[in-house]
Length: 298
Image (cartoon, rainbow, N blue to C red; front, top):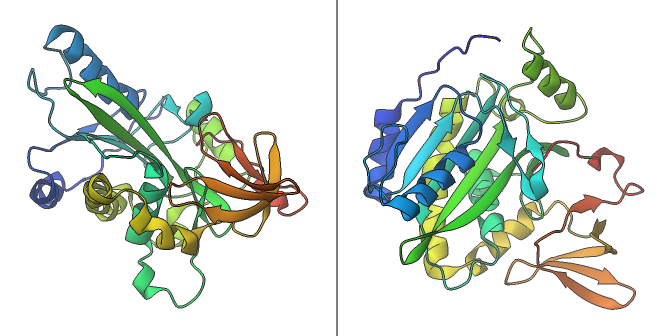
């Protein structure tokens, strides 16, 4: 097993920024864990069952927001049970958990994708079509290749619900090295995935987190008050499928963007069909874009 080279995450500085937005938040960095989403979900479930828990040094009965970062995530999860492969030094894998109570959860993954993309590639600095695009409902692409994904899960927490937002991004091209897990990851990467340092040279996982985490927290606070509607224009600007022939489950049609609730709108011979999510996987039609075959989980 390859030894993990620990990075400087500048947690004190990041904490200073985040706690002004979200008082009570904690930041934890683990050298290795199976899944940051699973770890945070299990904490909430354990506390809900027993009122206290044993976990990573956090206080018993602590249901405050938490940003959990893994330098190496060994069993990352994506939508529909897919695996998310990553490697130390080459990936950013983290989850943010907080209590959230929006009137409508629809479109949350789209808003999160917009917030991440705008943090990395600010919309006000674009002089051409964006290099970062969003593939409904939870993928982030760079220059026509998959850069990362978002996994959103919720769990009952007391009288409300806690949402866990998991994010995985490729930072640099994966090298196989001697670790079997790294070799598997590198083999998948070479099938057409993108890395963030293609857009931001010399980018590291800590520097990417410093850009993304404050934007993500602000997005969630805004979403709780206003839902997806304020993000619709930002999403349309980065919509990878807009105007293209796509399939969503058993439905095939031309993408007409998304509705005010974040539903994917497909123009079919039978009329306009709204795809709301759930057990749906969207793929660009092979005849339109042969690069869209995605093997890594999202």
